[in-house]
Length: 344
Image (tube, rainbow, N blue to C red):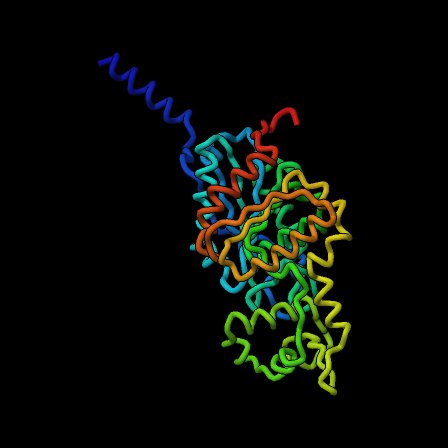
């Protein structure tokens, strides 16, 4: 009996010594962080932003380790919860861990009153660009065991998020070292015609609330890239429409000034500093020609990148490809070795 009691006490001591909750699979949490960059915007977009954070298997037990981080920017129209329903980013973290590559993965809320802030900066929508590059990265580094270095941060995104990926990477080369653009939107200049401007000026708040994808996208990009804090319209935008029916060239210039194709020559040092740069898109994607035009400019200026054209449309294979292409890309290009907390 004494032998049995000793064995039982020994087993109990092992249970006490083990972590209370072993993390055997990737865990996803919907959290909130505060973004000072978004404060004070005219649309009233909340500066307290939702964010999904995925930690890899073993994160809870291995308290002496830090991990690289992949930041993922979602697309236009749907809120972050709906985006996650489609992407299931925890599957990608789990799959990476199963082949020996452990990451933290982060997907912030890029939604706005008009369904997307385009990871850009302006008084009407707010500064979503620095929300990602400064506020979010700072919050993640402060609250999770990250390798808080450029070499261990990757940035990827789909559609509007693909646009955000190249924009943020060009403007913040000190923050991210490798990027992956998926079916990126808005790479060439996004013109606003006099007809579109006139239609937007006639829209009521109810019209905007009930607008379809294409119509509201025109409103959203105008609010983001042609803001006007003094405008009489409730959207606080400068449509550029003059009384004679022509467009103010300044608005045309402002829209073009947010095009990665236009910005590219100014940010060659940032692009050339990337450790990894990948682009992919489906062969039936409506954004294919814009991506080809952008890549022609990359070629013209001698920027190195990887490209894959795959069978698919704008969204039908994104969940799969995050797991099978995006995470392996970052495993190749980021500093992925989990570093001990001691001796730093």
